[in-house]
Length: 83
Image (cartoon, rainbow, N blue to C red; front, side, top):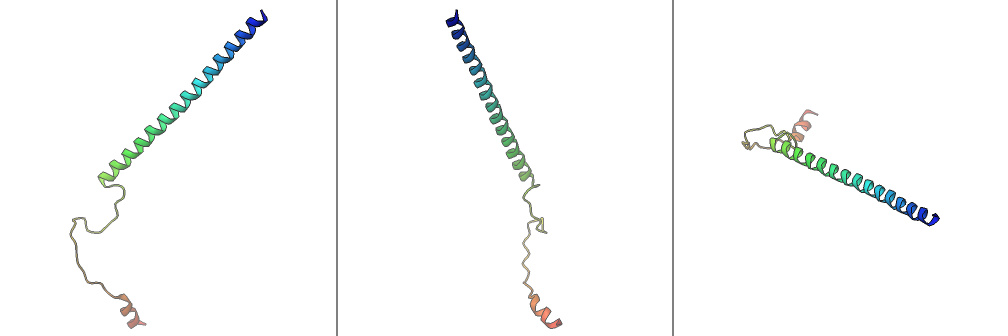
């Protein structure tokens, strides 16, 4: 009878070990899937906002795309005259 209890105890131990391994693996897998989904969601949200012009846009002053060629003023000469 003692040998039977040792065998049953070992089988129960292996069962508990298998359940713990399955739980740990599924917990890890759920974490990886969640992180991947959140990463893809953030990637596509940023990409969509950038496409609409909400992110990464610097104010240029001229929205029509017209290039205005103006001569450069030398402000250092004006300061010297006033001093």
